[in-house]
Length: 314
Image (cartoon, rainbow, N blue to C red):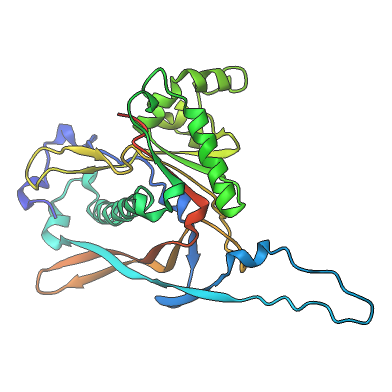
C-alpha cells in the first residue's frame, strides 16, 4: 500500500500516470496447464522402450502367438499455493485521485508479482542443465555464440532438433528465445538468408505479434518462435531498480502438446487446481484486503523431449 500522503496529486497530473509493465509471460508455452482436482497425486508413465520393441510376431500353424507384456510406472506432482495481498484502507480510497484506481491497481500489482514468480520458477527449471540428459544440452562459447559473425545458429538448432528426435521420437515444435538472444539472432547472416525471401512482413509483425517479437518469424524450422522478454529487479528494496533477464541467455527447444491427452508426451506441464482472487474487509485496519492466489506445480514430465542451448550469446 502506498503512503497515505502520496495519494492526492496536483490536479494537473490527474490525467496521466506512469507505470512500467513487464513483457509477456511465456512459461505456459513450455508448461501448458493441466487442470487437476487434487493438490498432489500421481500420473501414469508408460515404459519408453515398450513402444519401440521389435517383437517376434511370426506364428506357426496351430501355435499360440507370442505374449507381449507391457508395464508402466508413476510420477508425482505436488501443487503449492502462491499468494500475495495488499490492503486498501477506507481513508486511502476516500482521498485517492482517480488515476490511482486503488482496487484495480492493487490487484494488478499482486497478480503480476505472483505471475512473475511463476515465470522465474519456470525459467530456473528450463534453463538448468541438470533438467536434461547430458546429450540434450550444449554450451556455446567464443565464435560459436550467436552474436559472433562466425557462428552457425541454424546448425546448432538443427542439431538440437535431431537430438530431441533421437531421444524421444518426437519433433520439437517450440523454441523459446530470450529477447537479447533474439536480437542477436535476427541479424545473424544465416537467419537473414533464411527469411529474406519468405518473411517480407518480419519488420512489421513477427513471433507472437508484439513489437518486441517482430525480430524473428513466427515459425522457424517448423517450430513456434516464443520470445521471452520478462525481467526482474535484482536491487535491494529502496534502491534504484536494476533489471535482469528472467530467461538469461539460454535457448530451449521442446516438444509441447497444448491439449492434455490421456496418452501423450510433452516436455512439461503446469498442474493447477485453481487460481482466484479474494477480497475482504478488515475491521481493525479499516480497509479491504485484496489477494491473488495460484495453486500449481511446474513439472518436467518428459525431459527427453527438450534441449537446452546454454550461453547462446556472450
